[in-house]
Length: 361
Ligand SMILES: Cc1ncc(COP(=O)(O)O)c(C=O)c1O
Image 1 (tube, rainbow, N blue to C red):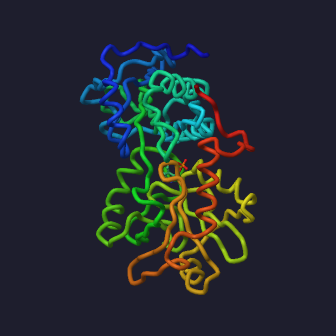
Image 2: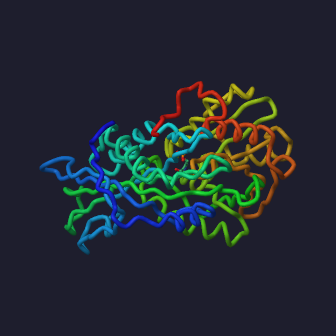
Image 3: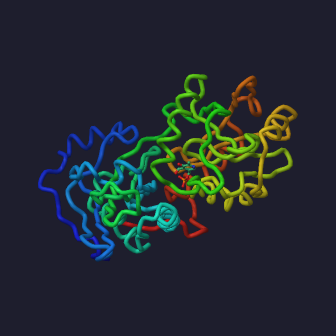
């Protein structure tokens, strides 16, 4: 295996009993494994100091550019344990490519795809004990990220950048089965604009989304739904998930790329649509069309797609002056079928016809 990220083992790992207690109820994003991957880039010397080392805090100068101008990007993917004990990643190459696209938009250096894959794989190998067992829907969530670590207050592309990967055991997103969530359609906030950073996975997008997320909660909704910034008439995406509709004539419709994040799960669902008898369509969808379709039954199901929650049924939409249910107000049949199919591929319970799984251990 690649030795591009050599391992320095921790001398102070979390005790077996403590790790077992964490894995029994990991939640999401609360606990971290024993190691981290790191590498540093400088304009003069390129990528260097690659390694897997004990998890520890960063030391940053208070003028580090990321703290002021948010030059930062990240990724999110998962490692899954199969019934035979082996450990696999799902389409990590797609995350590596999106990481490079995000880097270009934020004028960060592109990390070679091989470094992305090697750092993730070596971290999972070092922290194998943290990959939950194959029963249930647990996985090891992996967070690669990159930020401007140069100490300099000028507004320009940083000349020193830090790359890192951390990992966190994750439980099933739904505490009590797949019930479905309500989305608040915000007419006050936008997520992206033409020429903006909507297609990049950069931290600033998420900082800007928090007010909209709070607005959604104030209206009793679980998540926010964004419209286009100029006309506030077409559907874009949810806070951390892409949107998909199922129509009564057998189409799976999702907003076209451009200002939205190109989700790996979105792409997966489009590729699997025909296997469940749906025709995949990428196009503009208006809010009016959604409201009319939910009312006359031509839109039968809506769901959101993303790594954290796989496929989330959307059963209700609320906005200024309206509130409507989709279908019968519960999770749709096609939604649940697609969700099961994606999970079965990820956990190795069905044949991986698309060659999406990459074995790590
Ligand atoms: C804004 C946004 N849209 C969509 C997604 C879904 O992307 P993926 O399926 O790659 O997790 C995410 C999660 O990464 C996201 O943050």
